[in-house]
Image (cartoon, rainbow, N blue to C red; front, side):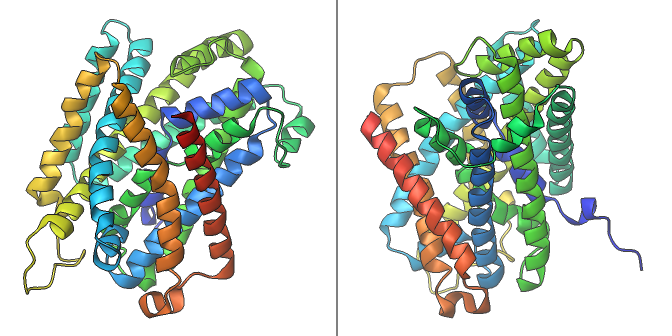
Length: 410
């Protein structure tokens, strides 16, 4: 009997990689390359390693217990958890959706300026919603594989065309902290691979019918490939920025400036190829958020907001969250309301609330995985091992530092 090709047997990892590699990651990696050349390549690797450890921990929890990590938080941790997470999920979703719309609008407008940035933004948002609402998971996964391939090939080809001093590039993987680089290092490590979207991986492996311990190996291979691609993509962006030195070093415009500099370095068609890759990165992030985050809201409302009854809550194998009204309502919330943010400045109170709540999320995720995945009566033989605990502790400490940095800026 022929084995299923690895390209078809895995997939959720490609989805999480394509979702996590958005405009924010591209901007952070580009700024790192412009300001510090290739000296911070090690930070990209560290970020991918830590996010991979977090993702593996939440997936291992689900395959062992049969419940998503979100369900575990609500069922097994103090009740304030659901209040904090529910409020943060709505705020995070609103602001991130607006940012994704703006990034998609910018990328599409750069390629086809016949429509304005805002017109392209709403087109992308509605198109993503239609694809999510009417498309099956298999279509979604194949589209995300296509996007991650497009993104990966475009930056890899452009990087390969550069005349590189490989000795200098390789020294960038030796951890060093150049003067005035700590803030950017934290941004690069913390930004690689997404944040709240990590939780969506649990729902995507469910779509793949990975539901118990027998799928642990497939899940780990899936994540190793996903975060290897994530790391290599970020490394290529840093190298491209280090050699092209775009003049604009702020916001999404830095990526357009990088494309313009690639024209000077490499000529046609590399600027257009890079911009297509940029578009693929931001639209795939939008598609991943539009498809995955409503699962979180639907799961949350099913567990936290439903009336208590004597009947047992349906587990993740029995429920069809995508068919619920909660899923569809939240998809609509992502699709249209955040569009108003493209026309108005973000209110300062909203920015402060978002920054504080968001800064707490990643240390909260790392801390709860350290607690929950080390309880043998919950995890059995799949409880954390020393190496995994070491990575989670490193992630916890890093994100606590990031939390402190954000609080000091307010």
